[in-house]
Length: 306
Image 1 (spheres, one colour):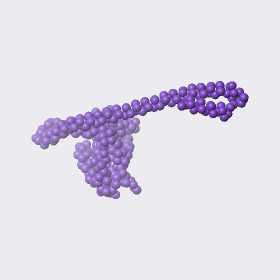
Image 2 (cartoon, rainbow, N blue to C red):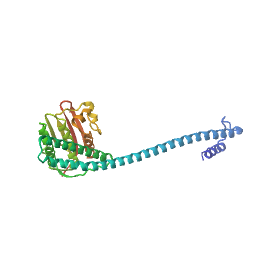
Image 3 (cartoon, rainbow, N blue to C red):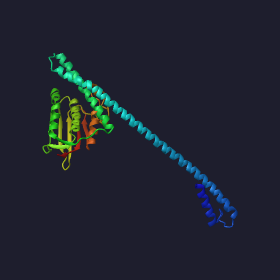
Image 4 (cartoon, rainbow, N blue to C red):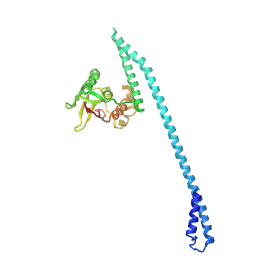
């Protein structure tokens, strides 16, 4: 097809514009030789160009095929991982719940001091393991886009009262002051996912209590003027975080340094879950900290007054 177009072009130019390479109209014997040479040269150029384009198109198609294959493999692996985690969590949680239940029953019986300590250790370890299992499942749901946000009407002050009661005993045990400060202008009820909000606060307050040996932990809630955004602050007077470790906070299975897991426990998933939950609900989360002085986590969420 390309050759036909080139030949037609030269025939027309030879008839309509009979001028040779030398610009002499009478040189007819050179004119057709000249056009024949140009036909050959242009055909060679066209063939080279077509082969080059063909090669590039082949490479593009092959690259696209590889991307599709890689995506399908990744989706398959993700599905296998999710199924595995779901099955394993069920298999682990069933006996674990039995252990926790029997430990609660055993605690209410007549035990001496050593036996009471043993039961307490069983309960703490079981609760820690259950918390890690739940975190791993949440991460899996977030990665696969399966975690849903359920917006509903909830009591704002009641939610914070529950958080206070959950951590009150632990703070008293460590001789820490736990304070909840809610702006009086905050409406009593709001529209949002109270379950996920509770999960965020449980993680942040739990970390604050865990890493604070003296002083206080404060939970504050305010409302940004002129907007429907609520601002939470969870502040403590604990060990603080070094600047160079700030970037590690919101990564999976990452902690500030290697001694934290050994000293305080935990899986390094809580803050990443908090970040993902906050962003899924349309907010953002930040952290300010000074080593030796304490840490403050700020997060905002858009909530509607119910």
